[in-house]
Image (cartoon, rainbow, N blue to C red):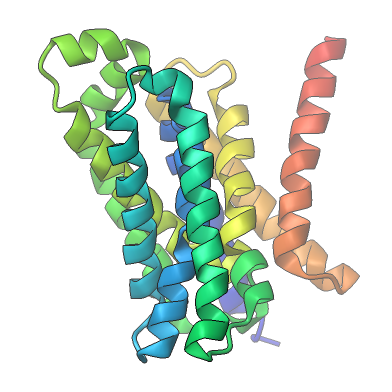
Length: 262
């Protein structure tokens, strides 16, 4: 009867991990970067499988490369804010297309369904270690850079004028986001992870009086969605990852509906 304990622990860790990154990205208006990073994982996965390397390493390097390419292209635009979404979507499509092309070109086999949507039932101890390490790394980053992150989120123009190392902070956040995405592949996949990042974060930010409070509330909500979604999936004999994604949408629908009728 203990076969479900590892998947449940991974679901809870992933639920705690993703919304913290989502909170930081929403506050800074960089949610599209998370979407790009999650899709840019695929080429690295394909190359890692082809050369016998750990898939997590390949996915991490590939997603970081995608984020760096997008940042570099944005540097070359005169109106980076207006072009932000267009550049991010273009790089996203390019890396996703490259990943799909590499599969037949390299003659490899990848379980795309598990990669895109996750498979909690195949959880290994190493997945727990990886996700726990990412949660620790993210916590250290949050604690060490809390004041600059708050300043950057509240007043980005003032933060830039004060001499705050914006590029270093943004690259560090991109790196943390890449760790989060790669660590969440086993639980919810690289596509559905964006829902677990954003839905609890939006709920946590509503009425929060500080960034720390918002991140804590978002993380707790994510644990309820992810852990509860896994247990519900067992009862209904459904795939856990997609069900967690549906619950994220359900949270927003119920929350917005309740707020509207107040």
